[in-house]
Each structure stands twice: as C-alpha cells, then as structure tokens.
Image 1: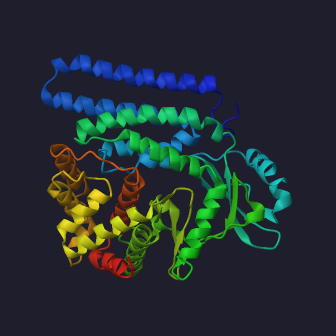
Image 2: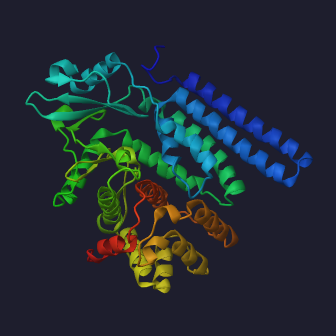
Image 3: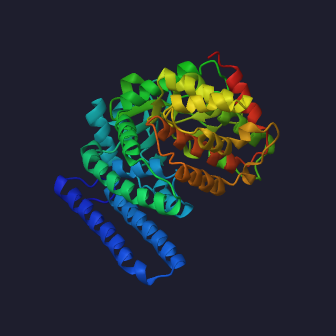
Length: 440
C-alpha cells in the first residue's frame, strides 16, 4: 500500500488492529490490578494515571495507523477539559496536527469520480498541494472557469467504508476514558450519550451535501452581520464527497493570540467570538461545535471568518428556550429559575436537590456573573473542573442529556480560545448584550 494514499481498510485487517488494541489495553489494566496490593496509596494513584495515559496513547497510535473516521472521533474528545486530566488531553490532542496529505493522484481521481472530470478540466487552475489536511479530507485552492477563487474540500477515498469498525474502536476508547475520568477526575462519564452524539455528528460530517446546507443556513442567519465572513458553496462543483466553496481570506485565529498582537484587535476578536457563540446557542438554536482556532480566520478589516460546517448541532426549540432561561437566570441571579431550567434540560430530576447543580453553574459561568473585567488567565480551569467533579460525585449528578455533549465541547473550546487571546474584559456585558437582543 502506498504511503499516505489510502486509509487502512478491509474488515479483516481493521478487525485485527482492533483486537490488538483491546488486548493491549486489557492486559495493561490486569497488570495494574495485580500490582496494586504491593504499592503505597500515592504510588497506586500515580501508576493508575500512568496506565490510563499509556492506554490512551496506544489508542491514538492505532488511530494514526487507521486514520479517517476514528481519528476524527478522538479529535472530538480532545478538548473535554471538563472530563479528563491535562495529561490525557495532551495525548488526544496529538491527533489535531501533523496529518499528512494524500497524493494528488488520489485526490484527482476522487474529484473525477464525484464531479465527472479531473480538476485540470473542471477548474481554470487547481493547486496540487493541499493547504489544509485533516482526518476526513483535505483542502486545495483553485480558481473556477469564471475566475472565482475557491477552496475545494475532498473527502479521502474509503473513509465511509471504515465507519462501523471505527465506531467499535470508539467504544474501546470511551471505556478507557470512562475509567480515567472516574479514577482521576472523580466523574462519571455517560459513555452511551457521548457515543450516540459522536456517532451522529460523524455521519453528518461525512456528508458534504449536509455541510453545504449548514453553510448556507449560517450565511442566511448571519447575512446582516458585516463583521462575519461565511463562504458560499458552489453547487455545480460539489457532491457528497467534494465541496467547493468561495475562498475566505484572513489570518488564522491562532496568529492573533499572544501578548505581542495588538490589544485592540484581540479585544475585538474576544468580543466577536463570544457574541458568535452566544447567538448560536441562545438565538439560533444551532451550534458550530468545532470551537478551535483552526476553524476561524481574522481579516484586517477586522472581520471574523468561519470555516468547516460539517459538525453542526441543532437544538429543539424547548432546549433553546431552556438554555436562554439559564442565561437570563445567570444574569439576574434567579437561582429558582436556574434550577427549573436545569430540570427542563434534563440535568436534574424534579425530586433532586437543585442546590449543588446551581452551585456548579455558578462556578462554570463565574465570568458572566460578575460585572467587572475578568482576566481569563486568572480563571483556574483545572481547579474549577475538579470542584465541579467533586460536587457531581458527592451529589450523584450524573445525568448527561444528548444535547449537552457538543454544547459542552463548544464551550470548552470557547474557553480555550478566550485564554489564548488573553483579553481582560467584562465578559458579562458581552453575554448580557446577546441575551438582551433575543425576544424569547
């Protein structure tokens, strides 16, 4: 098999790899259990953490060999600071970068199969070198026959054929992370809800017709906002596995992070990306769940460019309204309304004491509860997560409704971007401005 030109496939080959992974992971936990009686308590805790991390590393290495859908799935888990310790996240984040592109011959053939002709015929020019490569596909710059600058996203051949096996690998990974979350973070992870949500989002991401539909809807909803750039898809040059869209120019969001970047620009970006997040959750009821810097550009105007509309979570109207109730309760200090909203959202049963859950929301949304400038660097994310985990464990707050999985992922990603921008500002006022503009 030529290097970087295909995805490991074939039921037998992938089953063997899955079996090897399961055997290695299982053996390592057995060895850990055999050693525990002979170790001191601190040594037991340290070795258990090391075992969890080593197994996460094994699974990541397996995903790099398998590539494709499984790699995408663990990328989706790689920012869950609310569930996993930093050491595990560092392992999972290894899949976020260094994905080698496939050969141009492979990509050219995929375009021929999907569009009917090779890129040299379809486009006026087509850059044979990908400018972005990820787990499910890669992106090339091109110019259409009528002179429009475009980005062409091509799905790797064979990805869909591996989905079922990759979802089985995900179950293995989730069992490892469930043990890790319980033993290290003292949290119960509802792996069934996480698995179901990840499976649904993965299947959506494999369908570029669905992504084009998402892109169009975001463009319609944000069309009046001159500070947001959404690409337009070109229907005649797109298919289920090829997506051609207008090219959005700008600096990667990561390039505007850091103290050396103009403070005024960073302040604008921090306010804009928070506004973008809250409008989606509280006003639109649909969420661009990939909140990481690679999906955003900043132009010199400034304007915020948004990329990759494959993973979009739509919330039923009762969920959107309940999230809005939470937001209003946070701003007004109405803990009774906050508790009622958490019941409506499925985090609490009506018979449960709501006080611990209210306390958790107070901790997580602390910057939105205080009417003064907050420095995100001073927000102790790890300490807050540990306190939340302790409260959840003590009060058996284990309910994790399906709609929460990608909402939490997006909010954790937003918090990471906020820390990277390092802007000390009044985040409550940004939050309140968004809430006040929403009718209901």
